[in-house]
Amino acid sequence: MMFLSIQELESAINYWRTQSPAFGEELRLCAEAASLAKPYALMIVQGSLRIPMDVLDETAKSAIQNYLTYKQISK
Image 1: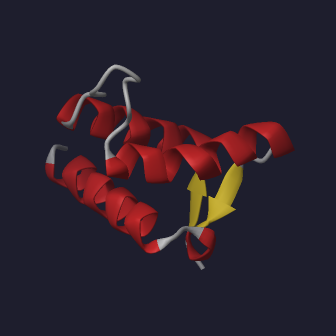
Image 2: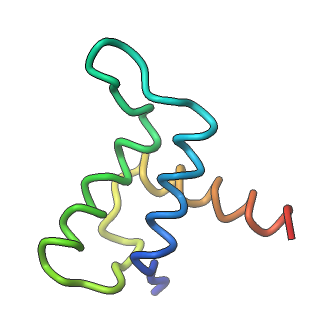
């Protein structure tokens, strides 16, 4: 089982925020950043340092996988 650290999740959210900045009057996050924000917030509230990939929904899994691919390529 693969785990994500809270730092990786935060970096992925920031990556998606730069790829697709918030929009509208309410400054709504893009779908990818929004899908990662919920587990990130839960981790903060629960004091968790890592989260299993299995608990992420499909949008969040896709967003994190695309971020990890970008991170690997940009090394």
